[in-house]
Image (cartoon, rainbow, N blue to C red; front, top):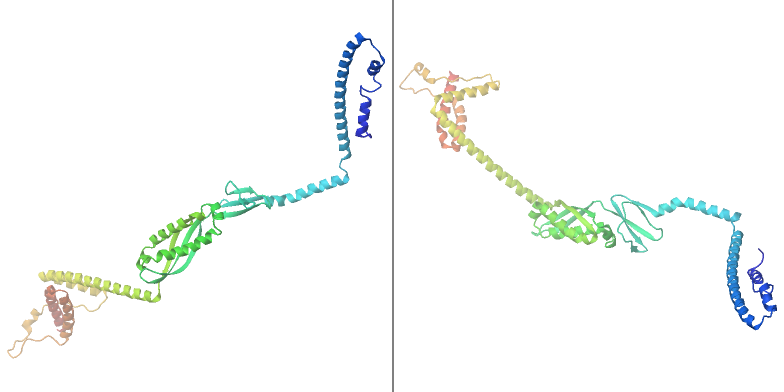
Length: 390
C-alpha cells in the first residue's frame, strides 16, 4: 500500500455517509415538504441522521484500527533480518557459548566444609551471614568475598625473658591452640585475628609469670596454663576467636642458678643416702646381735654355722678344707714341766687372730651384745690353726 495516512483519511471521508453522493442527503435537500409533515419528518430525519452519524463514527474507528494494523504489518515486513543481521546474531551466540565457562568461573565459587565465605557487595556486608560450605554465586565487579578457616590452629609463643616475683630471670615459651568461632566478626572487627592473638599471648604470658615465684612456675604449670587460657579467651571474644588450650613448654634458668640448684640437689641426695646407709647398718647390727645371742645359747648352732661356711667354700671350688678338732685331746701328749709354761700359739696364729679381731671390733661398734659370738668365733679359729700346725 503506497498511499500515506492522510490519503487514507481523505478516502475514508469520501466514503462517509455525509458526502455529497449520499442519496438520503440528496432527497432531503431536494424535497420540499409541507408545514405539518415537515415537523414530523424533521424529527425522523434527525433520528436517522444521529443513527447514521453513530454508525459512521464506529466505522471510522474500525477503519483507523485496521489501517494501523496494516501499517504495523508493513513495518515488520520491512525490518526482516538480512544476511548481515543473521551473521551478527550467530557471532553473538558463539561468543556467549565460548565465554560461558569463564563467566561461570567468575560467578560460581566453592568453599570447603571447614571454610566460610564472608561476602561484601559494593562495600557492604551481604545480609544472611557467611556462605558455605559448598557452592555460592557472586556478581563480578560488584561482590567481593573473604574465606575464613574454622579449624583449630596452633602457634608458638616466642621465649619471653621474665623477672619472677623472687627476682629470678627466666625464659619461658608456650604454645596456644585457637580457632575462629564467628567468621563475620573475625573479618569485620579485626584485620588479622591470628596475628593479634599471637601478640596478645606474649604480653599475657609475661604479665602472669611476673606475679609468680620460681618454685610456683616450676611446680604449677597446669594452673598457669589455665589462667592464661581464661584471660586470652576473654580478651579475644570480641574478635570472634576461641582459645581452646594453652601449654607452657619450657622454663630456661640461668647457668649459675642451674649449677647452684644441681649442687643443692646433690647434697640432698648424699645426705639421704647416708641416712639410709646408717639405718641399714643399724638394722644389720641388731640382726647380728640377735644371731650371736642365739648361737651362744647352743653349741650345735655353731656347728651348723661352720657347716654352712664349708658349703659356701666348696661352692667356690676351693681345694683347701679346714676341719675343727678339739685341742683338749692333745693335752695328754704334751710333757708337763714346772719351768716351762704351756705351749704358746704359733706365730702364724696372730695374723689370723688379728683378722678376726678386726671383724670383732666392727661388730663391737655395732652392738655390745655380740661379745659372746666373738669369743666363740675366736676359739674356733684357734682350734683350726692348731690343727693345721699339727
